[in-house]
Length: 371
Ligand SMILES: Cc1ncc(COP(=O)(O)O)c(C=O)c1O
Image 1 (tube, helix red, strand yellow):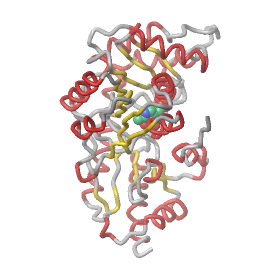
Image 2: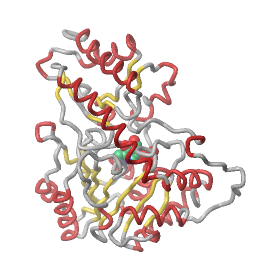
Image 3: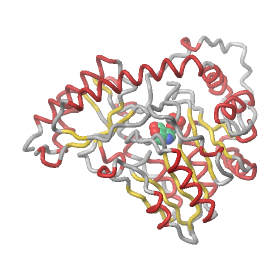
Image 4: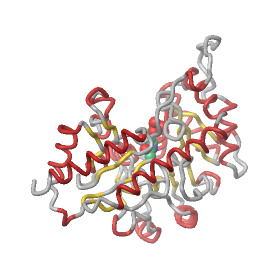
């Protein structure tokens, strides 16, 4: 099995070198926090192997927030949502299987199934349809060999959220077909609209993935999770996790527990910050005639595109943005889209950096007219 490096990782600012980046609009999380901010002293922590499922108190708290009668037994802690997605894919998919995945998407959701060699059927979300998921189009793709439907909400890179009714329809389709539904809910704690229920609370066929990386601002503590109502699924995922790393990092899980136990104060304050940043982007979009967008319903990213009639050369735009302004966005090709699209992360930069980055985008667009 060969794992090609994904552009979203190879071209990420941490690989490029943060010192080259003045205006960082590539990030898909909120500002990273320090250990000191969490008020945590780890000097008494024994560096042992830990519970293979993950810390029981953390699992119980995640289940309680999910609701729907879930308990800690329905939660498996993983090394970030990325490991969770990997575990789900390798546990449920074989070469002879078919799976349906929304595109664009966070690359792992598409690439891991592809690398596993199964048939990956991309359900393209269309700008003209506000990137909305069409359950009828999804149902039409189900085959006898379909094993998995894979969705993300709020969505990366568009920020569009799947409404509760649409999610219910997808789950109904999956239940009738005997197919599992994976819902990547990494951005669930950053929603401008009331979020759909945690998918795993709705059906034995549904699997939810979450993370502390994005809304909690601690991606350096590699902690995410898988939630599923069906104990057989959790067992299957545990077996894969044990093959990869036996258990999680006791240090990361201690940090995660601290951050998660502050959720009731942290998340509302975070929401207010992200909303303010969103308002800045929305005000800029309203006065930027060369771009068009679908306003996000959550998360901290959006996915505007250069208008077709703007006369802007997309390659020149990105080159000028990077080389002249040291400003970075996530170009469309990170998501198998044209580079007329750009993902703008507005939750990570502070106000001044965000404004500087947006101004750099406007200037680069104009400099790239006519190539
Ligand atoms: C939709 C989505 N899922 C999963 C991940 C992986 O997050 P992590 O492994 O840091 O929890 C990301 C990161 O950007 C993401 O955007």
